[in-house]
Length: 217
Image 1 (cartoon, rainbow, N blue to C red):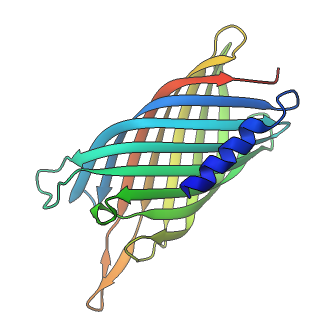
Image 2 (cartoon, rainbow, N blue to C red):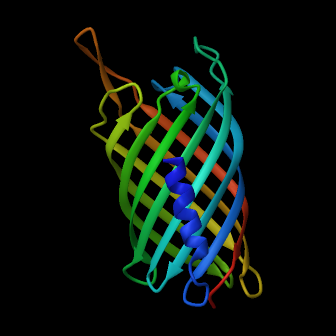
C-alpha cells in the first residue's frame, strides 16, 4: 500500500502543470487511537504529507501520515508504544460548486504488527464546501467504510469516517495554511471460542500545516 501511494504521488507530480493544478502539503499531526472502546487507548503525534492534482471537476489526492503513539489509558493492560503508518488515495468529483462525491482507499499499518489492528477499507461519501471569506474555505465530508479487512481477522458490519478542513490562502492563494480533523469509527466483531465479541476501533487525527500550489490559475 505504501509503495502504491508513493507511485501515485509521483505520477501526480509529473503531470503537466499547464493543464492541471498540483498542490503539495506538509503537516504536523496529533492522534488519538482506541480499541475495545476506551479499554485500549493511545495518543501521540507525527507528520503528514500529501499531493493533490485537480483538473476541471476532478481531483485526486495521495496522503501518507506517520504517527508514534503511547498508552494513554490508566486501565489498559498493554501500553507499549508503537508506530502507525496511515495511507489514503482519494478521487473526488464536484457535482455542484459546493457539493462533491468521493471514493477512497484507506490503509493503516502498525509497527510492530501485534501492537494494534492493521486495517484496510474503501470509503464512499460526499463533501460540502463553504467559502468563509476571500481566500478562506471550509469543507465538511462524511463517508461509509466498506470492505473492511483487519490484520487480526474479524468483520465490520458498519463503519464511518467524517472530516473537517479549513484552509486560508492570502493574495494569489498559491500558499495556503491548512488545518483538518478526521474521525473514524469501525464496529469490528470477532469470534473467540465460538462467542462473538464486539471490539470497536476508533481513531482521530488532527493536522495543521501548509500547502503550495505548483500550477494552474
